[in-house]
Structures are given as C-alpha cells and as structure tokens.
Length: 216
View 1 (spheres, rainbow, N blue to C red):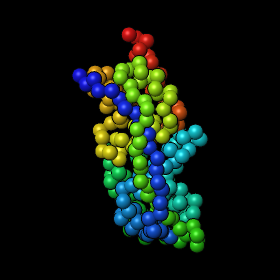
View 2 (cartoon, rainbow, N blue to C red):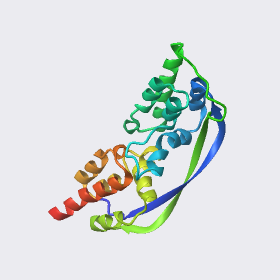
View 3 (cartoon, rainbow, N blue to C red):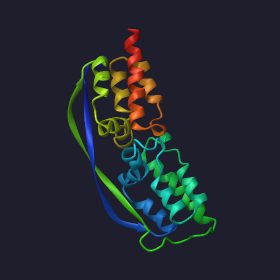
View 4 (cartoon, rainbow, N blue to C red):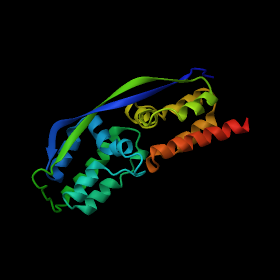
C-alpha cells in the first residue's frame, strides 16, 4: 500500500493567440486539424475554469461561434453535443470535431462567412503548475484541506491531470487508490465533473470522503 502524502498543486494559464483564424466552417475545420492539442483543450474547457460559479454545463467555443456568429444552429448543436467527458485524450476530441465538420461540408450544405471582425481566432494556453503549502498525509487531513485549496488547485487535479497529463484518472482518485481506499477512488472517478460547478464538485468530494470517516 502506498503511504506517499498527497501534495496539492495549483496552476495558472498564459493564454495567447496562435495567429490562425477562420471565417467559415471549412477554415474552422482546417484550423482544428493543425492547432496544437493545447488549443483544442482551451476551446473546450475554458468555461469550466472561468465560469465555475455561473454554469455547470459550459458551452464549447467552436459550437458557440457556429451557432451565434454563423447562425448554423444544426451544425453548432452537433459540435456542442460532443460528450468530451467520455474522451481520455485531446486528440480523440479533435478527431470527433473533424468528423462532424467533414460530414457537414461533404454534403454540400450552406457555407456562410463570418462578418469582418467576427472570425474565429484560435487561441492556446500554457499551463504553469505550482506547489502549494498543503500536504495531506491521511484521509482526515485530505478532507480538511479540500476546503482550503483554491479553485485553480481543484481544477488542476480533477481536469488537467487526467486529460492533459495522460493519466487514467484524476489525481485524487489515483492517490486514494494508492492508500488502499479503492471504493472512495471509484466513487470520485465516477463523478461527472462536467455537469456541476467546481464549488459543487468540492462539496460532493468532501461529502463522499466525510461519510467514509464517519463509518470508521
């Protein structure tokens, strides 16, 4: 059994323009094909981070642009309907978008162009990971610290670690599994963090772990 303490980390992101833009679905498709994975991640996950208090179901930048700028509601809905939670790799999300856009374009459907100034500008972000003063040596300390860490820290361990660092599960579940708390690890892995705000997620995690302590 692993007895390694859990070291809480946090992050901040440097967002920048890639110098690639699209004025219609064809150019959006070409952009999605060539931008780095960090760009796909940014445009599908940024609302989770920036609007964690406002909406538990974040919009998708690609879908938003197609629906609200190009007025392609049907295509936008298909892009928005991509269930990013089921994908374990950014590349798989990219390929799903490519498939949808190629299908639309191959059918010779209407291809509008965005008004000047309303083009889709591809962005990316560099994530800087920092240590925090918080370290949990056991489950009780972990529960106490969950209330103290920042939203950035929670976001990093739940979203960034499994998807961008190619881990099989979030950091919390991985640590719990390592200390022999298999049932708790499974419960946290089965949470759908995409359908709840980050503050709501914090409460759910604390509730699940606290119930375990009460049983001891």
